[in-house]
Structures are given as C-alpha cells and as structure tokens.
Length: 149
Image: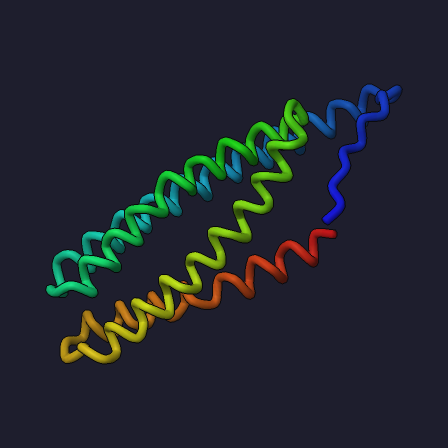
C-alpha cells in the first residue's frame, strides 16, 4: 500500500482556499459518518439485547460494544490524517478501516446465522437482514478503497 500526501507549496491562493475548503468538508463528513455509525451500533446492541436471550446473544452484544471504541479511534486517526498533521495516522486509520470491515463481516455472519437459526419473530428476521448487510461491509470497504486510488 502506497500513501503519499502532496506537500508541495501552493502558489495560487484560489487553489489553497479550495484545498482547505475540501479538507474541512471531508473532515466534517468523516465526523458525521462516524457519529451516525456509533449511534447505529448502539441501536443494534439494544435491539439484540431486547429481542434475544442466551449465550450467543451475549457474545453478539459484546462484539457490537467492542467495536465502538475502535470506530471512535478510527475517526480520530482519519481526522489527523486529513489535516496532514500526522501522515502515519492516515495510514493506520486506513488499515483500521479494513480491520473494522473484516470484523463487521465476522459479526454480520455470526449475527445473521444466529438470528436466522433462532428467528420466529419478525424482528428476528429484520435483525438477520441487518447482520447480513453488515457481513458485506468488507467487500464494500475494499472496493471503496480500491476505487479511491
């Protein structure tokens, strides 16, 4: 993986203004996406907690809660990388995106199988669908990263 930042000095003031505005917009977008993502994981935790019982349900709840600090860390690393203050933070943040996507795939497969197997209520079907969508996040993150290069 090759990451580099264009650190050449800007001579044109319009280009510098455009870069700063684009950077600010990117950081705001990353912040909102991470905030919405955390809210969705907390809602998913409470849905699993309210609608299922047992050992596997507890494992899925712990897996969902364990992901929240890593999403916060990922947002902070991407923020510092976007500001071009810490380029190593950007690289670590990108790798953390891939690790979180792989974790989402495992969590989605485990949750999808659990709720399909134990599903007798409509909410179990919806949880199986949500976890199934979560399972394809590795492919979407990978294609997102390859398209950005």
